[in-house]
View 1 (cartoon, one colour):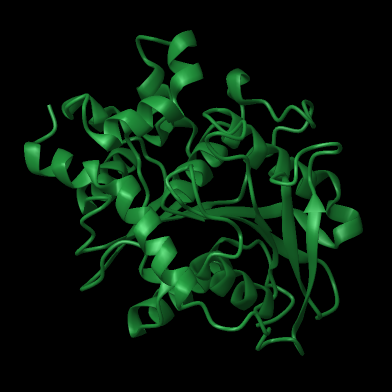
View 2: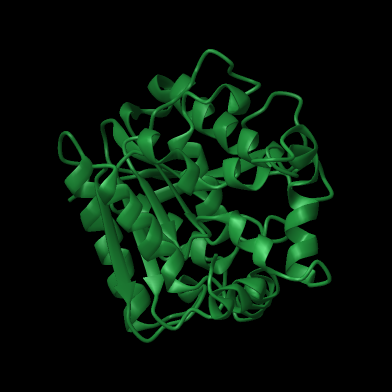
Length: 312
């Protein structure tokens, strides 16, 4: 049974994530691209034909010649808020592209707009398959595609990466394209939704997770929360990098350390970076820790490549 302190911290995840996103949006800098000489951006690209406006993304393209590795980038927001213009993912998208990675920074359907689990996960898988199907036209290396996300988006990133062969989560727009990614990167990641069982049913967090999993729990009343959690798919995990703030009061550090330990026990490659002195959503705000995390992110991506990226 999870300890009470851990559950109390976890109960504030959704409210705190929304607060952090709202604060970061208020402080967001101009959308002027400081790396325009290195990248170009194509906006509002649909990854599901005839889909909703939420099923679109912005493609950040390096100006360097040749084929590039790619990153599918997924924003956070408690599965209910946020978009691809959130400060953290936009900051990463621009700098990843400037370093030779083609980045598909996506929106997905949220709670209330068809995005209850697994609808949002299917969207992420459709976006990933879209990258693979169009790899040649996009000058992407199809065997060097990564997926990354922040907070709720990190939960979706790990689920996308770990369930490539799971029959329940087939990309509906591309049912024959079950893409195995090169590696997955999660920033302050919810890894086990089972923790919600320890909360009072009257708490906002409990009710939100129940709402998020509403349709899934009807189909899977016994193991629905577990099967919506990355920790349930250890034996299908790909190489994993986790960033976790040591002062995170929204997603407790024990979530990342527990998953990292379980992956090691399952003999799966994993790297956990504990970022000292920062709380949740630290990639939204300028700081030495954010800069260092980005550099570690880039170094990890490079270590997973079969050959050097177009830009060093």
